[in-house]
Image (spheres, rainbow over the protein chains, first blue to last red):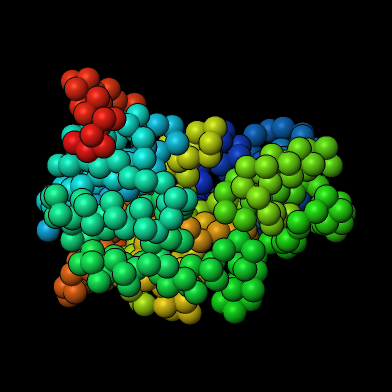
Length: 77
Length: 334
């Protein structure tokens, strides 16, 4: 899976070396990508994001879905 | 050693000649131009510049001009870089050799198997994926093809130009636009969603050197302006297969689309791309490698290079005497 290849630097720039693909993200997206790389499921990730950021589970679920969708559009997931 | 290079345009539609010349500064370089306005003439890279007859006028005129150049300043090696020149020079490469002008070019058979109209069949032999493509020669064919492939799709010329059509009106517009300029057949091609990646290389029946890139920004004409060096295993394997199966001789550029699980071959250009100097700057001097192969030297394989290097083009100016321009225009040489 190409998602495993994503390198994220200290400025929250994601980079896929084999494709030369780069993109910017916020802290939440960074965390979501890290959890996806650990093969965690969408619901599980939403729960972690919700608890860590003290936000509503539904809101966190939408955030996770948004990141997954963007990764799919980029062909990384 | 005197090396002649064509393709001296260096506008926002740059030809590969300048990139090739930058890798061969140690030689006496002869620039072959088709237009006195080509900026590469005035960049100080060439020891001599000669205006050439267009390849469309035929072999005799091109041959006679090359003989004249050889007599005047000497000419040992010819590196053509323009698509329009290649069919003629490939066809007559043995005659060039007999004239004492060496090249490293594919055979006509190799050249044809990577033409867009034949690429699907070649990809099948390679065991590589290729987007669904339908060859068309009439408007009726176009209607049938877009019905089968659906929108959006690519409308492509067999040699030049490619446009993304979002609906039938656009498809018809591009059908006429390309066929009026470049003739038939045209191709209707499925769009594969993924990341376009490229590989430039030099081979002589085996791959001697190459570099992979991802284009970051392009001009309106689709020419690379910024790029990043990459190492993509699937792209490399595809390239190696292409070289091994075709026994390719010379320079080439592979264009591919990488998707999450696959790689699709899109195009193989039978020459150096205009960004070839990127490879030289990365330590893989492909034009020099080509000259060494032509000279029969023992050439070491060079397929390793630094990743994540950024290639950036920029605009530069130069001021030269107008006499240069006038001399080239009137005497057809500098």
